[in-house]
Image (cartoon, rainbow, N blue to C red; front, side, top):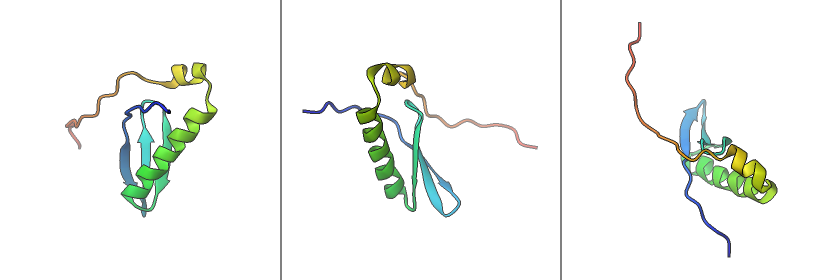
Length: 75
């Protein structure tokens, strides 16, 4: 049975589509809709875990990711 892990997905609009990013592993994908971008990111992550060896996973896996909003002065 495969082990399951929880990761972060950041999805943002880019042009006519959406870009999805997993910051813990620096893996990205895209799609025409939010759901497609999310699904494509899941697929990309699953492929990464299938292909990468443990040392690459350990080197790329960031243990802590904080997603927050900040306010900055403009102009």
